[in-house]
Image (cartoon, rainbow, N blue to C red; front, side, top):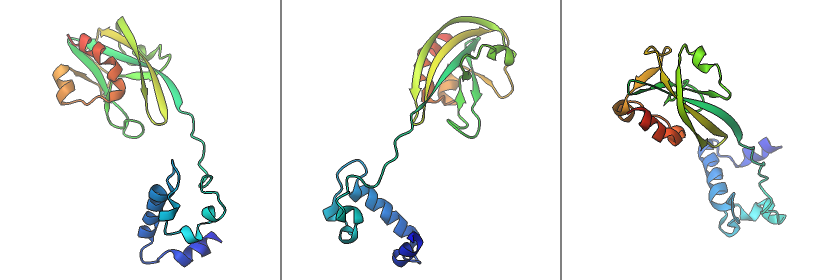
Length: 183
């Protein structure tokens, strides 16, 4: 039924432009977060929502999904005035960016898994909210014994952090801790 109805009105030579026009109409006239501007609508004469007095009800908007909360442990690993960074995977959240190593909490065996030892000196907490996920982070500052990091990780000094490695703003709650650790 819908296919037949749409075939009557969609121009076969310009279906993409028609689709864009419908989206523009929805965004600028039907106004998803406000009162519709029906008097400006080119579809006013045949709009079923207007005829039925349901312009406030349509379109039906699905309820927003609750944001997923992740408890994460951020490892600020220092040695010789440098901090350890690793590159995030090529797909997914913050794809391909450099980050301070972190794991889902509790992450108690992470240092051993990475083949690293050291001493925890202090820490801190921070939160970063993405559209669909919230990171509640606990940082641990470590003085690491080994110069050798896991494959693909790097040591970066203050200048390299500024020039070469862009760390996502998700980790900005720990900037003061990083600055202190780089001294």
